[in-house]
Image 1: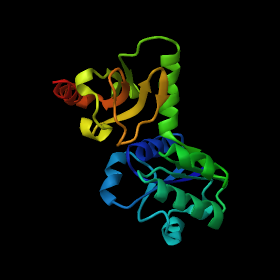
Image 2: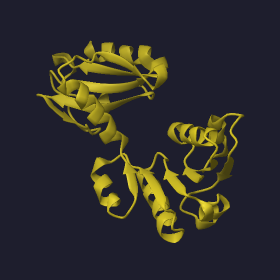
Image 3: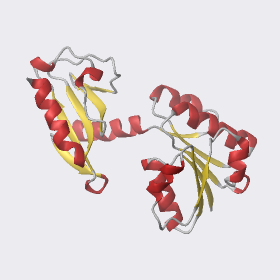
Image 4: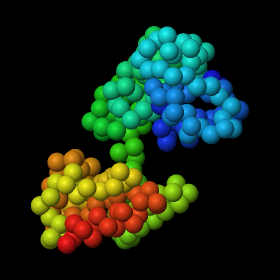
Length: 218
């Protein structure tokens, strides 16, 4: 199988290494050459510096022979635009797009793109645990590289916007639980007493995360 992957971040690099390890021909495209360091020295595929919305860049990456195109950059717009180029201009049969904004997911599914929304996937998995009535204070995921923690907000922490909580760069808030209802909070969402935040934290950032929780509590 021939695969072209746009974006050599954490997801893109891991996906590329998995596919290459299975014997597939993989080419990774990224705007920055230094991003390819994530692939390691044993990566057997190819790399192209460029943008996924440029047809010439995609041609150099082998899009005309590609069976699969996966757009997994950090930007929804870049992913969508490059995926449409792959689908409509080069007729790639299987086009996958990572979209963070849940509101856009169903819209672009109607264009024939296969969308994956980590926000919805993560929230759904957390909800399964919560709905079963089992407390989820902390659990390891991704081979121990990340931790999922449940942060119960106190009265002293209430009234702040999500953005004001100043969590570490290696942490992200996946869901908010309020009165038994689960939602995906925005940066301007104001938290209230008794809210629970489900936070995905890189294991190496756990001390920083606990420090933030303690600082806000004070």
